[in-house]
Image 1 (tube, rainbow, N blue to C red):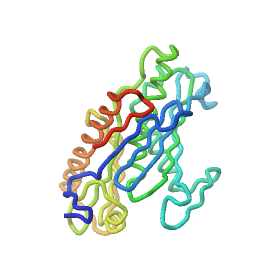
Image 2: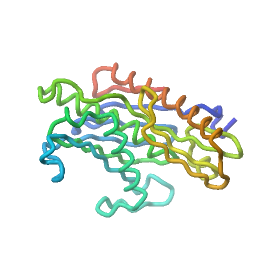
Image 3: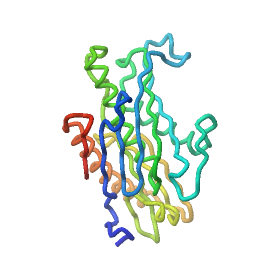
Length: 246
């Protein structure tokens, strides 16, 4: 048993509050254990300069951690994000684009801002899972307004961490487990089970493909649970008070 009494292949308690910010086109507060991330989508009727002649739209993300989100105060500057923040926001953007039909989106950009208000491991994976909710609702708003005929999403997307701690494969690591992991991996998959991204590192001990397969199977189990929770969120009405617990 782990410190929080979870089994090895069990994710932390998850709660998603859809429509958390009234001013955003789409938003969600996602909590995974003690990790909490606000994801908010905004719509711009412009695209990056290099896309102006393509006729396609764009989906991108920004990621940041509030100063008191960790025990040691962090710099809150968004004007000069550190390399870790840049890497994470690019990951979130890639994941969202992987399930968006950019041709059907038209010449507009959806920005999804992910702000960590409390960090206890898995902020990037929670960001991916919550950002999908925010993106979906922003696109749904365009449909309701008659701008788009249907939501231009090809699948859902969610992410979870998996690692090896003291020789055991553990799903959805908290900070204490992550800091002690021999192998640390983040996996993003679509709702239909297709892999979008794998970020894996042997922090201490190299691992073979048989272990990798077991880790991916564990990640798939966690992502299946998150996908079901996302679907439950979209069944809840009204949007501005939808809470989904899993």
